[in-house]
Image (cartoon, rainbow, N blue to C red; front, side, top):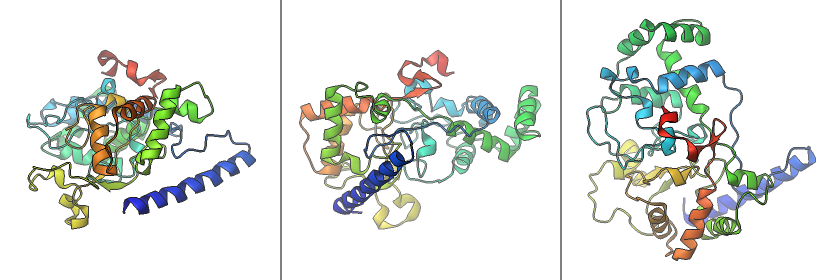
Length: 336
């Protein structure tokens, strides 16, 4: 989709949002500011027993071959749900080709992973568990270990009515991940009508974020995560690299379609101030560096430092809370 087409599509979507907003006022629903970004809400329909079980599994190294790593090895809650590395190390110590995306608000993404490999968390989790480069697990081994543990036997019996199975393990992990929303960011409070929740400079940063066109790809509840886009619309951020780099090929490596070359899932910007380094390859160490590249490659603009600083201030208002606490205050000890 071209920039013009995408902008037109966003304008139509924004118009529909205004209509929905107006209807909500007529029905007695709490009004929210008419903006292309919406407040995030936790899913209150999830089963607490399955969440608790999934949380235990998420941090358990027994889900990996050789009991060497867990899901939490790459998704650290004190690092915004990522790991702070350009490239994580896999099961055998090798560097992975992709930067680890955050697990927070993952249920709000329309596809998973940088290339959108999977639509469902269950399918994604199974891929991670069984992939030799990642968790290097085998189902018979994982289930045997879990069912030997009296605590797990009791938890699975309570939540699923029987011992651990492939389906119940995948469901528990996915249920926990769906619970990992980070509501109540300062910008969410601003959207709900609290004019004091963000500063004048942060509000100016948001206006610039919209005026430059960043909002075309980063909108909705997840401020992104809901479409694919080519990385390098106006300039080539891959200049000087080999076309043989599978990670840089984007969705082309999956579909084989030339139109998908260097096309990636647009990441969510929620909690982005905590998840450096940035991009699929972790090549931008700071938010400032990331904004410079995005302005040039995606918008064809050279953005002055003053504007970048204001936009970065706005991005800082997207950091939310987890389990009732500001995400930025979670320590490494508490994340375990």
